[in-house]
Length: 252
Ligand SMILES: Nc1ncnc2c1ncn2[C@@H]1O[C@H](COP(=O)(O)OP(=O)(O)OP(=O)(O)O)[C@@H](O)[C@H]1O
Ligand SMILES: [Mg+2]
Image (cartoon, rainbow, N blue to C red; front, side, top):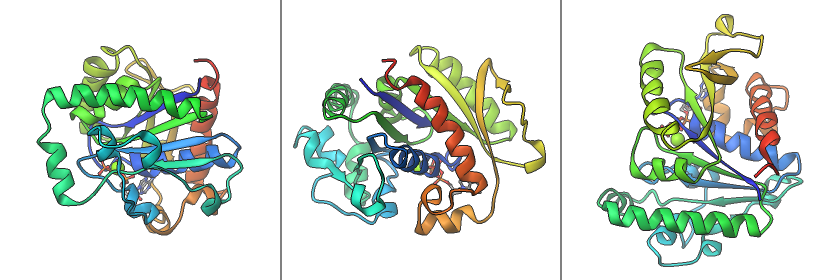
């Protein structure tokens, strides 16, 4: 059985999607079979990133309208990775987003059951790592993603608001759901980065501190930095996260 990783944060714009995409691509490049799902159903963006607008979306799967295989796309040949690279996308059409926003607790409970079934099927098909790019905070979709995850990567920005809100998530969500959790600091000042590799915040290990680098937004818009710039500071940090995930593959 592979490992499921939810990339989450308390606030928006911490770099979850950027980290999820690069993590998935680098693990696939190294030979792992990877599946990346857009669990940010209220503000999806992976379809834009991969420039794919398919017939079937994760929305339809979670609504019981199709099976999981219908919404997974094999993009291995597009990026030439050694391992297989699959994506499952959420619909950014405003009507689809509104529909998700109107779903009640009962629908979300059913969606959680379907997510667990999807996970089982994805791993049965040989996937080693399932990466869930979530929305910020405690929306149902994000908590469902955390609930089915083995590991949570909580992305934190180096400011007081991010720290205070993340502490709430640690106590109120990650620990309540008994999740193994790691912190990733993103957009750090170069000079503030602790290189010892032993930093902890709220008793959780900080597995990477990624510097704030102004070429990331521009490069990330057109390519996957991890694949195009193997020596970029961002890529080096993502590889560090890969090593932690690697430790958990096969342990489940
Ligand atoms: N280390 C970094 N340095 C500079 N810019 C970064 C860094 N990491 C991410 N960014 C940029 O920050 C912006 C937000 O990143 P991203 O969309 O990945 O965040 P997010 O947490 O997924 O946001 P949301 O909560 O809205 O889904 C993007 O323009 C991205 O390229
Ligand atoms: Mg995002």
